[in-house]
Length: 126
Image 1 (cartoon, rainbow, N blue to C red):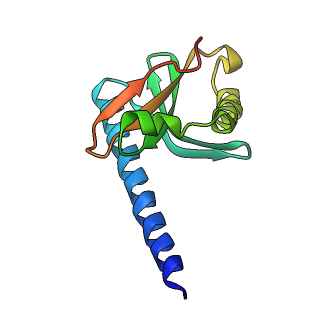
Image 2 (cartoon, rainbow, N blue to C red):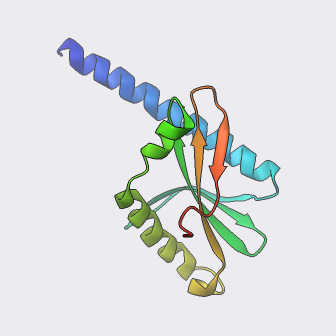
């Protein structure tokens, strides 16, 4: 196996575990703020949602982004990801008592290289 393949695999392994650690830290953050986690890494045919929390009657869909800085983490959020999260959220809401009428919020949780968390609440409201 060429050396660059090993380097790429190692980087992928490290990034995967850093992302999982970031998701765990964000899940603990939401739980500490009284927003229990209802699902982690929830998947459907349309995509995956990193975390789903509850804030009273409101469902909070959370995308976790990890990078060296909060700004660079936010820069990794693409419109395609936003579209997939919204489509997956619609599937989740089908199982809610109020369906599409359920109050929702879409947050992005940014985790920097030092593990600091910055939450951008309701990022899709504009």
